[in-house]
Image (cartoon, rainbow, N blue to C red; front, side):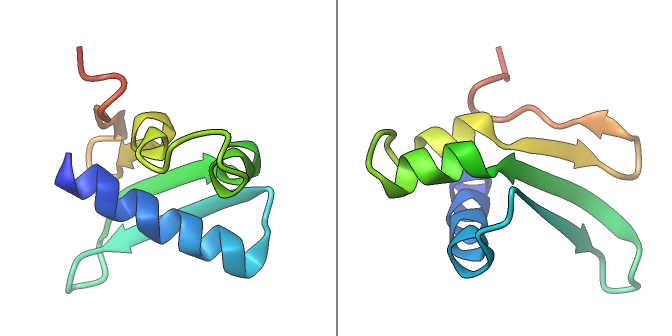
Length: 80
């Protein structure tokens, strides 16, 4: 949960700076190996910014892909 919340805050900050339709961040290891891809669309960011959704809701809606296995990583909303 902490990881998702930290990533969520970072994505919202990037969206506020860029106003992009899609915010995507690729995390890399120290040796520059791609590790994790995280993304969210602007519709969700706008709703959080306009207080239509709680900030923690983003942790349920982000998409995370483990780039080593190319599989989705469970988030708070899809880890059932």
